[in-house]
Image (cartoon, rainbow, N blue to C red; front, side, top):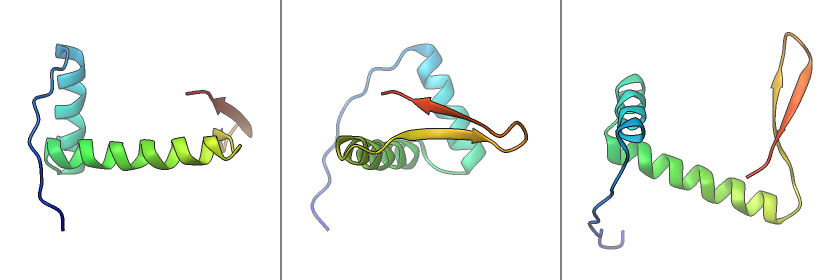
Amino acid sequence: MAAKKTMTLNLSPAEMLALERLAEQKELSKTAVLRQALRLYQLIDARLADGEKLFFEDPEEKKAQVMVL
């Protein structure tokens, strides 16, 4: 595994609260949440670059919502 690097991250109070809540809900560290978010963003970005679409489907209403990033 490559050596890890340390960085300083400036978040708004709302962003920090969202990060703290996600970390607590998922029982992960804030660093782990950010790593997962980065991996997910990389995956989504690559698939969108390949022409794929991202959407969420409401199973009850049978509706899909296309997400644009």
